[in-house]
Image 1 (tube, rainbow, N blue to C red):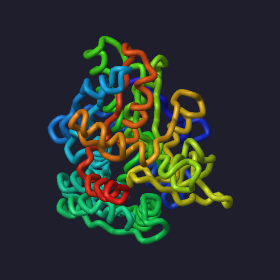
Image 2: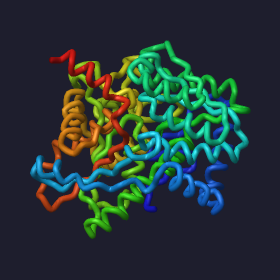
Image 3: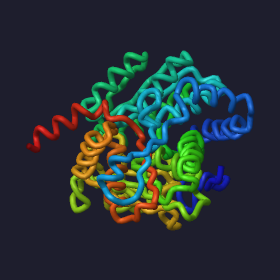
Image 4: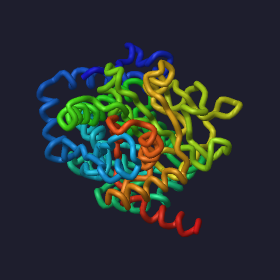
Length: 398
């Protein structure tokens, strides 16, 4: 797999690294060395492949969205169907890999943060499978927006802890989870859900999510005899996007488009467009673009999508933007909801509201391209979890 690798200190250019309390240094270094060892161990890789195939349900489908293509009248559109994975999103790719790492490290207690709940559900699923104690930290506001996923996590045996500090969303859940790790690092594995955090997490998450791009590359070659012209994915922390983008890193003819949440508008404070409007800072133990106030503290962010309202972003995405390898644009709540409705009605596929941001980006892009061009959208999750929230929003805006 072609790839962009961090340096020995976990930096992609100026972004990334490890800015953490001293008591976490040894535990993260142990994780880094274990990860490097296991990804070169045929036995580990065979076990990972077994669960990818027989539990996650890989490879995921590569679907030609013929009706959407015809409706938009431009480039040919394919969907990488991560929504068809067990638990309903791309999240299980990363979780199964990290759960196997936790097993090899002898950890029996797993903690995780979650926004939309998909990472929490995936973590609870793996912990049920491998008989591990599971604690999920979730912002209180997100437990309301994603009540179905809270019930799913509890059904799988996890303890869901609502976080009532700050904006009661994803950033605050990460804060509390990191605090738990500092207190309980000797017996606890932190199952970080996105390609963020201190080294080595961005590289670990990217590695396990890159199965998306590896498959998409082979599937596009089989279907079209060539690579796509554009890859499109939503970006919050950025794990689904980096999973699609990374295997194409050296294929310079393939353009990459990340779509951030513009929320109620870039001219309001109610957005989470980190790469678009953020500035370089440190959050949750790593350096990246951050939406921050005049004191350098992470500022409140907002998106209709509980999985995208994070004030930082993965360091590799920051590097891709700085070097021009990828372009990052935005979609408002309204554009994402319109895309949610269009894909549902035109293709019979209800996307997650996170993924709908990527669909919105492709809806804008496709008509501007010739019909011989190819776009691949990472459909990172399914929308069952969002239907009640979208129905409520639509009822209020009638």
